[in-house]
Length: 309
Image (tube, rainbow, N blue to C red; front, side, top):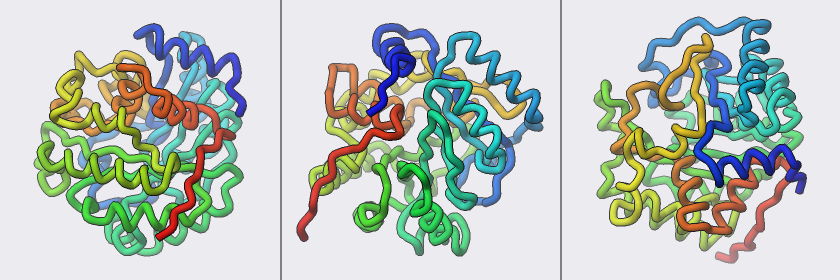
């Protein structure tokens, strides 16, 4: 495992201070899909910085002391060279993708593949053939990606099926967040009421017991999302630990409040980053810290469990 001094500095600042350490940027406003449930298409987006402007902007952020980057879109692989440049500028890089255009090599980077469920469900939401293309590209990736699923009304019944399918693929692990609603949009067909979310949280814990560390959801993270746990300690923008440590930007370089946009409903947040941060540190939890290390270090391997059914 290559936990470099630079990455140790990032980790130490996250743990010991509330100073920003990370930039989250929409590296492009373009996408090669139009998923029926995606918040991106419900928002207005500015034009993006060109390559020269983007490189200058990223270098400026690094000069301000932001050592880590999270690349969003749109679809980041539509600007593969900018993804590669970002992974050289920053000491640690996460990049989210739909997998359709493959997984370009990143120097200090970890790809995170967004899927919504088994093939039939994923293709219903993202488009015919998307699942097959993403999985075939996953198999050819130079480093195993992490799969991420946003749990919503549309896929909540397929968790077990999806995780079982993913465990048969050469992935590093699988993570989960819950759909976070937008205050200006009626997305009741997507948002799972908090009272119903509790049972799904428990289901995720059972999946971790079954499959081991590859299911990136710990008991400490669960406590942060349970309404009878620690959820009310952080479900406002002023109390969000991630908003203090991550500076978010649109594709034109202007700031925004959150990776979910300016109108995310924090009172009903389902962000995995907050659950992981607070899960690892409030109080300290080694299992969740290992999960964070897996995000920071592409070569890091989780412990696999052999499942006998």
